[in-house]
Length: 314
Image 1 (spheres, one colour):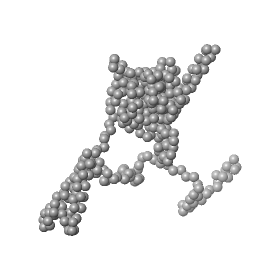
Image 2 (cartoon, helix red, strand yellow):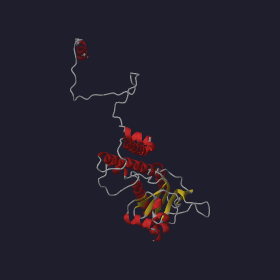
Image 3 (cartoon, helix red, strand yellow):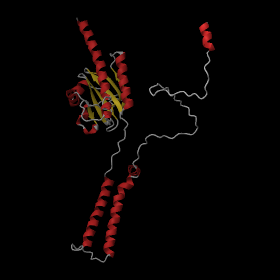
């Protein structure tokens, strides 16, 4: 008690001019950020802004005019040369000894070159690639003997690929069994039903054998140009692109898209890395990662079923 009274009696003199020294630089500081701004004036963005190519923007907006521009320039140049030749008083017949004749011939050559360039630009145009509507019927066939967890994972793979890419059809064959056929399928000529997958015919075809031997993903960017199109009769007839993704050594996933070259480099995969950028290396794990995940899950499931069947036989 006496110690407390002694402390209370001590008075520290107040010095209004006293200034506290700043803490050292290594002293931890607390910085508070508030989302509410005290000023009502909107602040403009001061970060880096994307650069604009004015010439490229103008050409993209006026494609037809730019393509026909060499024709106008060449025609005007040709008329100017002929007019200059007519009013200059020089003989209309070209004379190799005259410097004016040589200059006119050179100008005529440049004018004709411009005319031909404009004609080529108008005749050759980039083909616009647009998605098509698959011609077929909606199909959903699942292997009934699979566990619920495997079925849910197969449906998850379908939903993921369908949302993220131009995929409209998906077929998964594993261990000689068609586990999943979902999406759009070819229409049977006999009835209004989907053409189901014939696993024996698919596995003996050159397309499946090529993927099985290479153990690498095969991308058919324009399916109509490949002779192996006949080995995939279960896909809609107007399927534009196909990815054949191997599932280990026992299966394959057939992914059909509705756009030519619709699967980008970020959707595909490549096992050989050369001088690729980091973005390409990251994007290469998209569809192949789903294939590896399905291979691990299905391989575990079929391995367990084989062990159970062997124990039952014993």
